[in-house]
Each structure stands twice: as structure tokens, then as C-alpha cells.
Length: 161
Image (cartoon, rainbow, N blue to C red; front, side, top):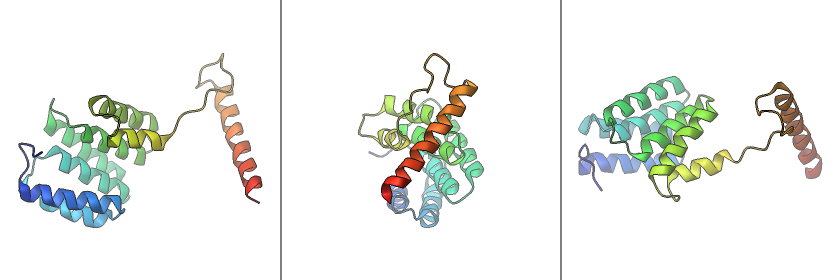
């Protein structure tokens, strides 16, 4: 379905860009998205997808700015892909909790088979705190959680031998 800010030609560039992103060919995807944005300059999904490419190519701050601008372009009519792309950029910046929040926003809008569900499953499930009677961010839980992780990693390494 075409949005008001789409043309058939710009959509074709976008679809090709998505295919390149799936192959981790972000440079080519970026070129295609630039072409799409020349035709549909205020399309927020194209701009946010371009932000993902920038982030994956090593400039997460530029990608972040592009995603924020895309959100402004969209106003209140936000496509779930805006949240997914924003979450991907936040992950590239190391902001895991904020990224999860964005994926959850997209997941609530779209069905469970959407890209948001895929991103949430890639993030995995957090382990319960070691000491359940203390908060997750309590220094003891943080330290013991890291220690538990190291022990599991060491044990997994032994099992491979």
C-alpha cells in the first residue's frame, strides 16, 4: 500500500534498499534510499531506514538524528517501522532498554509477525536477578549477574572441547 508521501518509483527504490539491508549491504541500500528521498523527500520511513543504514555503517549518532527527524515528519501518524528503525539505531548506540521500548511500541501497533517481534526475539529474554529480593540494579545483583554470565560462558567453552 502506498502512503501519501510515496510514488511507485520511490517505493521501488525502497523495496530494493530493503533487500540490500537484509543482505547487510548497507552502502548500496543507502544509495537507493537517497534516490527514493529525492522523489519523496519527506517520507519518514525512507528517512528512518536511511538512519539505520548510517548506524550500521558506523555512524549511530547520524542515524539517531535521522530517525528523530523522521519521527517529526510523521507527526502523530507513525508507521510501526519508524519505531523499529529507531530501536535498531538505539541498539547500535548501545541503548538497549530504550531500543526495547521502541520495539514494544511497534509491536503494540502491528501484529506479532511484524519486524518488531523479530527484533524483540533477537534481543532475548532477560534473566531474573540473582537475588530476587533486591532490585535488578542493586550493586550485588549487577555483580552477581556478571559473575553468573562469566561462569556460564566458561562452562559453555568447556563443553565445546
